[in-house]
Amino acid sequence: MRPATRAVTIGLIAMLTTACTTGRVASVWTDTGSQPTRYHKLIVFGVTNSPKVRRAYEDNFVSRLREIGVKAEPGHAYVPDAALSRVVRMTEAVSKSDADAIIITHLVTDEPDAKSPLPRLARVPDHYRNLVPYFSQVYIDVCGPSYYADLEALRLETNLYDAKGERLVWSGRSVQLDPSSEQTTISDVIDDTIAQIALDGYLPWSSAGRRELAE
Image (tube, rainbow, N blue to C red; front, side, top):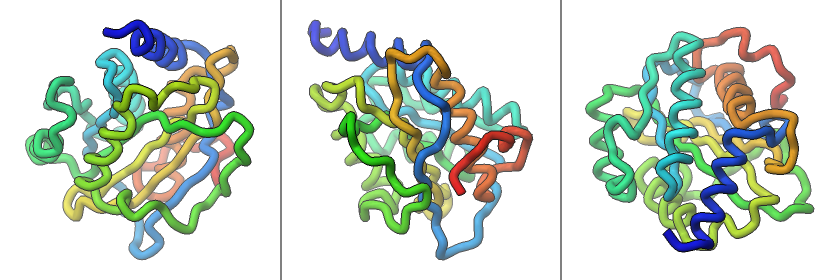
């Protein structure tokens, strides 16, 4: 691993294991063209070129989903790190797991002084709407050598896809993550993300919705 890549990976792992945000979901998009379905069987894929970071994403989501009664499995149980870039392996894993929905999660870059996005978004980029083109593009983008050049301006993005139609039904981004803060860990961000998805009608409801979420 090159020194620059190693430094970025260490920074991301620190962000995943130390405090970083208020844990709130900053913006949400939902498919207003159809009624929400509460999914009960999910598979989770974390997109990154670091196996440790990928497992932190997937295992944190799976642990919290299981706590609210959802049958959830990590993508790394089906697709090894070396094969994550192959979309066909991802779709095969969805079929083998018999999941009714898929979570794709990763960090996105942002400008340090960027304005906060609207709590409710009217649209998402076109390539987000279908699972295969989205996964293909996001892997290329996120695993690029300079994608995480600025660790001071990142958000956790989570996208929920209906497995049968391979279509996006929910998308959300966290508030900006600050790796120098010591208030809240990434698990709290994931906790609030899952609570927001449940509040919007796509997961079983639980007391996880007790926090202030996107209105």
